[in-house]
Image (cartoon, rainbow, N blue to C red; front, side, top):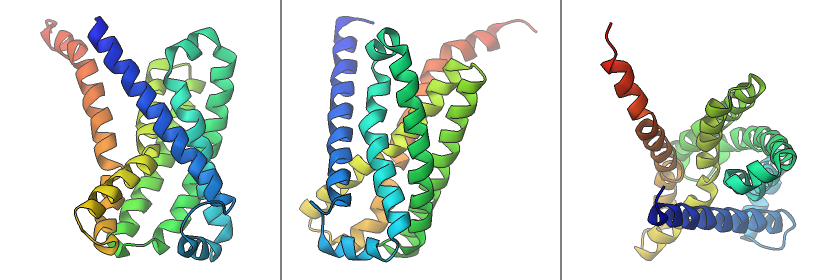
Length: 212
């Protein structure tokens, strides 16, 4: 990897880490009633267990997840990496179940309900695959499933970016939210799938080139 690419990767990791931790801390403040729209607090109070699972689970995932992508942490402190991974996947389970329970009552109508519901299902599925692959000793597959999983977790960050952009464009929240329920995570996941496809392309070409 040349210097330019290395700098771009480092910059991306820094931005991902800072943004995910910022939203993770905001979620903690929201749960503690130190931040957030009072209207959202009232809505979450109608399903306190599910909302607490979703908010706290998501907060811990965002606070721990980005750190797992730093190679220096993985190589220098493998026990810490393993324990953070256990914490991360445990709270994916908690947050995913909470999100699945909240999806049918989310803002944005049926379109948003499906967007958030499918997100919760895929988040739980990718978390389970990440766990099973590392238990089987398949580190490469584990990393790929963790990339997919965290890409969807970052939907908490990109959701707020899209809402801000729609707000600047003058589009009301009630019109923007159904679209944001999908935009928040689908492009993130597609980007990871594109990256993985490009990564495996040389291997695919080599396999095709081999004589039968």
